[in-house]
Figure 1 (cartoon, rainbow, N blue to C red):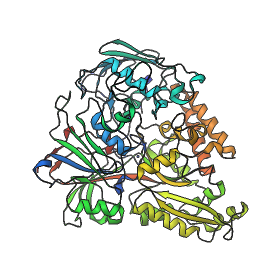
Figure 2: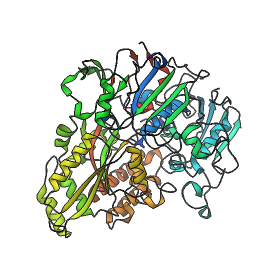
Figure 3: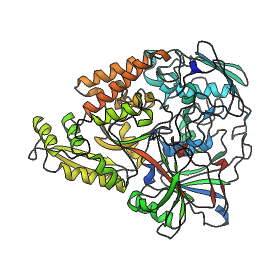
Length: 619
């Protein structure tokens, strides 16, 4: 990624959307969520349980004749500052817009509501000029709307990503805090952020330190604009709606679609916004059927109820793919036949993602965590459980984000200390016995996975391999949004999740490993790690990771890249040594769709970035 000292310091992005701080990777980089997402936590899209698409009856009659039908997993919110998962982000992208975006998940920054930006010589002040646009409630977009929306991100109690605006290593906007106000967003002194409205079309932000990825960070959903004062959850505004209503039924963005309905656990629909500032959608509506069970998804697909859809792993046949690489390295071609006899279009993209199992360190001893790493054979999982749909993961950071480049990634992977691509029961049993866990007196552990046959199969395989070693493993499944809620409450011991990068920066994923950031007692007020409670662990690696993150935060200047790189690798080493998270694979996003759907191919950052105003149906 070129940093901003390597380009014109007073660069202007014209209305056509010139690339800025563009990530220098192709659409196939070997990468993923998430929260997410969005960048963020997310379930495996290839199984149809996260940001993947496919949905409600394309053959369902005249009423839905111009409706794009997709499949999604459980949506948790439609409030941009509360969303941390790609299922919610897929909907939010249609409703809300920020200054810039990654078009269709291709990692090249493009203007949306931004007309131009002026960057000061010291790289600390960004002055944005915005386009003319109208919100779904009829109000005109102004600079005050952005200030209010970013204040919500910093101050509102339900904000999950205030650190992206204020945190060191992220945008790092100046603001005052007060310990008397509490922790997290509550600690921000109201309206103290260095965001200045200059006129109706212009505002500026001032940073504490240069942020080389500033414009990339602004592609994140939480920076989307809504009308000033619309929600009464920051000081100075009574609000037209309360946050709970806003998050479930009263959206008001500038996106190409406006909110129509959401029945939690069942379906979501948005409809065309005719006064959209950009290309008005030809679709009347977009509908997501919420399905997480593989059999239900496969039945829905084969009944031709979905226009774009996933193929769940239990029903997936690699031999059905007939594809070749396009100019971005994506595999494009056809797949078939489906069970109903149809041949459909196919796109396979190595995404910036990592799917993993995590451990709550306060509830799971290190010997247990390490024993599970010893008996996990990544190659076996890829070939026999996940049907080749991804790349073995021996680090959390995928190859396309590894700070030392591909060679450094491979060196780290080769040094995996738990038996690379083997089932080492002897080592697992030895460390368990040293900690007092035996077949007669086992440690009791519960694994919570998605409602996905592939992850359930992983659980059964892990349980069988642990048999007789000193761990008694109980298996359970959970809907995605319930799993997330339980994680936030610290009610998970051992669990499956995934992380999809929202921009190509190690810090974007590694912030979740800062030990102080993993305390589930503080979620959502002052922590947004991976539900690990790592700070509670008795280990020198906790301090190693904390020190490394602080070194990263304290060295934002472009010439300190070596210090940041060393810090990132130290965090990965600490994570690996304590095995608070076991990476399983780096994801492959696969989409399947019918010929009558004209939809742009997506990139390495995932289909949840895609807006559907440029998608059309020819039924």
